[in-house]
Image (cartoon, rainbow, N blue to C red; front, side, top):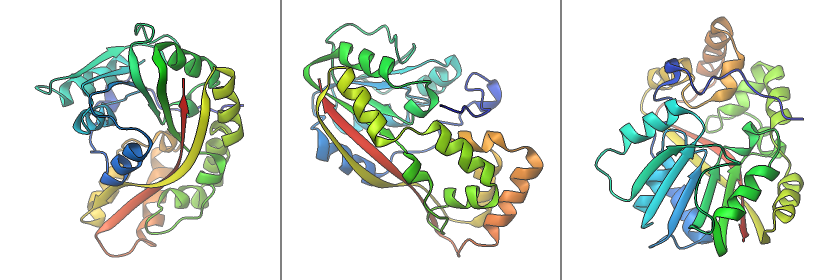
Length: 260
């Protein structure tokens, strides 16, 4: 069963929340190890503020369209990408993007499927918009990824150490690798592969910079399950354990790739 967190992706208060980072070079290396984006047509489904849509364009994609169900996120993405050619954004559902059939060479879905009640409709839609032989790349966390202990580079683990109920929420909404692979097969994909990635989320030059990021719950939907007092408590808990700056925050992800 998928357990949803309390974030409202449509709210004006979340303006810019998913548009304030740049994709790490380690992520770019992981993507190019799976597929050559040069000259390709990419759809970034669940694009949020367009961080990774822009990253695909930087990797050489000829045409990138980001799709998100939230008008707030789409507006952020458009604002972030002003003046960049070959990059567009539209509002749409992961299971009904509005994109033309067989119109994309690559479909990318990062941090999307754990927000959905099931993977199958989104994967079926990805298969529909991909050309034969096109690639779907799904990046998300499994329960095994989120159960890793906290450390100075893995701050997320400390969220669950301090507030164990968050771990129940997180593992409840994260699909297993077996679930994802079964859904990919049902949608008609083959040549399914998976790998893990420790992706640098952000490097903080001061502890205060990290605290501001946590206080704003920036790009962390799980923190919307805490009230303000609990969030303050969590920040103090992390402050007591964090090392000296710079602080390099990483998250572990599972990446699945499959051929249409």
